[in-house]
Image 1 (cartoon, rainbow, N blue to C red):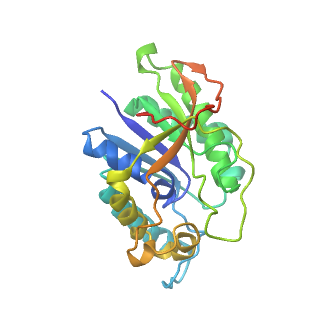
Image 2 (cartoon, rainbow, N blue to C red):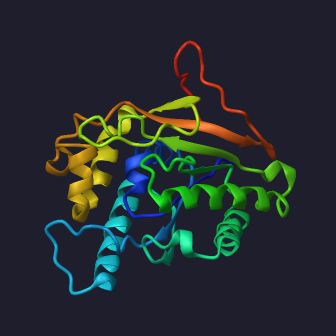
Length: 245
């Protein structure tokens, strides 16, 4: 049975990166798990005002729970590391915690950020490395038929609507998932993160007001590990092929 696990550092990463994919799998009856490593207490709070970081974290967790409900996520796990602190954590411990969740839930597919973190955010980059290590360690405890495929997710249009520029992509995109029928669901999940209006307006202008026209029809991936072995990602010569994960 197919099962999907997404591992991201902050509330809203799931909706930005692969919300349409998660909604699509839910519609197909595929169980989905989201592992969120921090509660986003270092982020901006938009129109909301909180007396401290702890209150902001709890608010962002509630926004994440709402987004998870919209996307039909079956299992939501919160590690609650301080936002912005992942590089300062004991890296083997972080990878072991992710590994333990993989071994417990036995996903067939694991999704996380690529080595550039899409935006270069340090928490994103650490999450990539920790999740990659966790998948390899999980293989030591799983039966061979239980090994998950590991995909890095990309957001090639993230900077289309703002002045900023991201890092050069660390890996080529090797496949795309058609989310045409789930653009509305992705938009609703993004809107659940009301405190993140600054980031939403920067990457998806109009979505916070309910205009989902800027959301594209595809989400993009790179397969980097399958059947217990690394996969060398090679960009297609005839464009990016459709995949199912």
